[in-house]
Image 1 (spheres, rainbow, N blue to C red):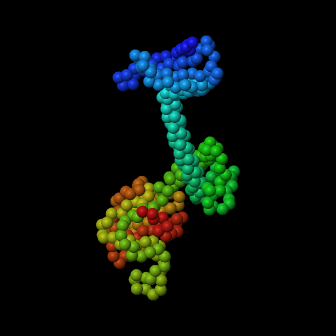
Image 2: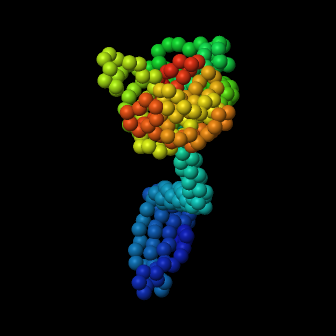
Image 3: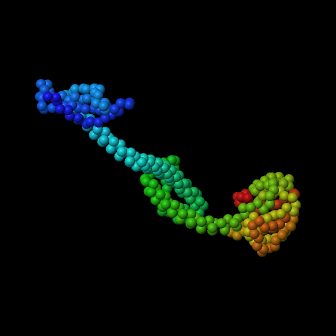
Length: 333
């Protein structure tokens, strides 16, 4: 009796112009073979002619089919993972770009904070210079004038003060600087009031030269210009100037004398207040009168060669409480 033919996964396939058919033949139960049951893999053309017949044990075919199933399942799983990653690839790219943006932002903020801390240190140094400047500005007014002078002491080495100062957070530094700035502001406002009062006194002082020229004779002891033996005391400055040169008031005041003097010839005296007066000698002409108020820079007279004089010049003298003092002590301009 012929064995029964069973087809496993039949199906034609084409190679070139020829069409082939694969069959798997398993022996039937009508005739029990003496050898273990085998499977025959047959390759046929579409017209039924056989090309190849390969006998194989059934277990080998089962293993091959199982392996094929594992491969197919694995490929299916990998394909599913690939599809998932492909679908979410743009999301991963967007997330990566967001992380990079955050990193750049953090780096920028770090630079800003570092620069801010550096600027805070510089401001701290500037505030320290304010304190030193405040002490110098208040010094002419005395130790009791500074509103902070009696409450706060200062000491310690001055070198590298800023580097050794205790530092905390930036906010702590700002809080300390705000406090110091407030204190210095209070001190500067008080100083402004004092300077306002002092300005009135300073403007009344004869800081300006009454006439420009070469100083022919300084204040103090000098050799006699008249050929007399020994030295004599000169109570002012002799400023060389051509006859008729304008003389201007070095500070505001009131004319207390305008007339002739035995030594100084045509003479002008201005009282600037505070027991301070200025004298102008050897004039050729006076432009103001007694008891007249004059302002700083106002034309008051013209130089000449009157009185005891060896040539055209201006004798300029400053008196404090009736005593002559060196005019250079006051002259700034």
